[in-house]
Amino acid sequence: MINLFSDTQTKPSAAMRKAMLEAEVGDEQRGEDPTVNELCERVADLLGKEAAVFLPSGTMCNEIALLVHCRPGDEILCDRTSHILNYEAGGPAALAGAVMTPIDGERGIYSAEQLKAAIRPEHRYGPRTRVVEIENTANMGGGRIWPMQTLNAVTDVAKENGLIVHLDGARLMNAVVASEISAKDYAAGSDTAWIDFSKGLGAPVGAALAGSKDFIEEAWRWKQRLGGAMRQAGIIAAAGLYSLDHHIPLLAADNENAKIFAERIANSTRFAIDPTTVDTNIVIFELANGEDAQVFCNRLEIEAGVRIGAIGPSTLRAVTHLDVNKKSVVAAAELLLLMS
Figure (cartoon, rainbow, N blue to C red):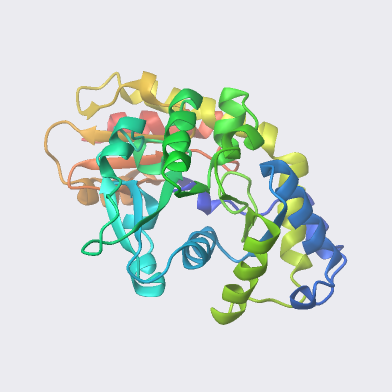
């Protein structure tokens, strides 16, 4: 099986497992796990924030951040393709009681002008606009990287209007490697930000949310309330530390392999894809002849041993990652081209 369904499919390497085995541990909930503490310090420094908290998942990072930032009835502005709107089971509405209003960006990225137009004037009849959410890279935009000029303009508008900025950085390190812009620079205009360890970085579980000390103190209250507090979590935090120490440079190969995959399948009239739009490790493309995407994916897995995802009636997504090398990516593309 060549698994390009998602970079969440990565498995810990032998060296990462060894680091997990040898991790020093303690009661994370009491602040006594040295490995968790080190990971949180590293992430806070990486993102230019005062503190961080280790959480089981990136979705929990988003949900806790929005719980802290919002009161029931507040409004969150986000791109129409964003993860918080489409892939978190309505969490911001169900948990924070927040209204999510989509902005019709281009491949996951909206402009300062679009944001300005979406901010509601203050009046008693509507929700109060509270949070501006940014996803970098934009997953359903095909792993698109936010240009710094656009990002800065959007965060400037948010600050001018007294709004909170939250950065979903699930795949932020893919953007860092591709653009050679630091995570700290990308997160500079945000009040809160997080990175995931269980995607391209190759850890089996976990993410870390960063912000001010006061924010993290309140985030801890929600972590406890939602049942996300852990005990000897250093065993899994060690995987996150290992990924920061060893796997970040490897993201360059993932990004390059995604381009190779896109270029190969672009040679077929069966698929609609512009390889120049592939910024990082996600390739989103169309079945040009109107085929059903899920049927195609099922056949591809059964008949060719390649797993990709259907994300629309005729839309497909392939994601490169640590566990799939260039040879396998090329083979996967060739097998797609051979499908009858």
